[in-house]
Every structure is written in structure tokens, then in C-alpha cells.
Length: 105
Image (cartoon, rainbow, N blue to C red; front, side, top):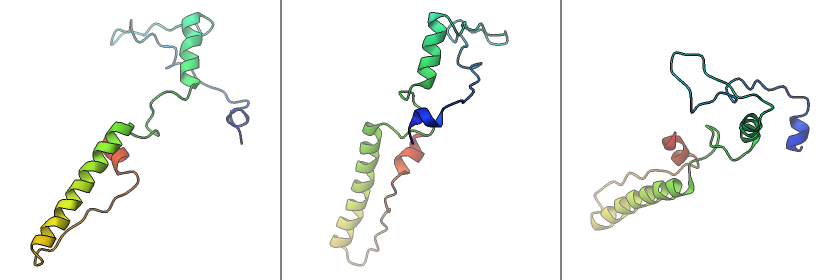
């Protein structure tokens, strides 16, 4: 099912999208862009684009790689320690697909 078909006849509330965040003063009603102006259309287009970072998106690739590297290193140390001393009982951390994403947020 295409995204266009899913969003067909969908109504959006652009109240937060059209706020002029650069000239916002705390405690005062925020100025808003006109939805038909160039800035308003740009804000709405950015809102509907898929290039934004959201809570449902994953952590950046560099962070996931660093997180996985730390986890592998920790498990390797446990394994090497067990090889050196068979009496030592290693505790490995099982990997989970979303661990880096959970720690990022």
C-alpha cells in the first residue's frame, strides 16, 4: 500500500508546524507563518517529508556501530578471561536488535 493511498483524505493540524521558532518568546503567544506563504509552505513540506528525525526512527549509524563495538569488546574480554582461568564463570551480554536505539533515546 503506497504512502499516498494511506494518507488520502487525511486532515492535519499544522498549529505546531507553522510556529516561527526563531522569533518565539517564552510566555508570549508565538507568531505563526501563513500556510500560503513561502516559509509556511516550506515548513509544511518539511513536516511531511521523511527526512526528519523522530522518536520512531533509529539511532545514527555511527552510534550503532560504536555501541555494537563496545558490546563485542565486553563479550570478548569475558571469553578471554575464561580461557585464562577455567574457574571463572563468564557473563555474556546477549545482543538485541534495538539496544542501541533504546540507549540513544
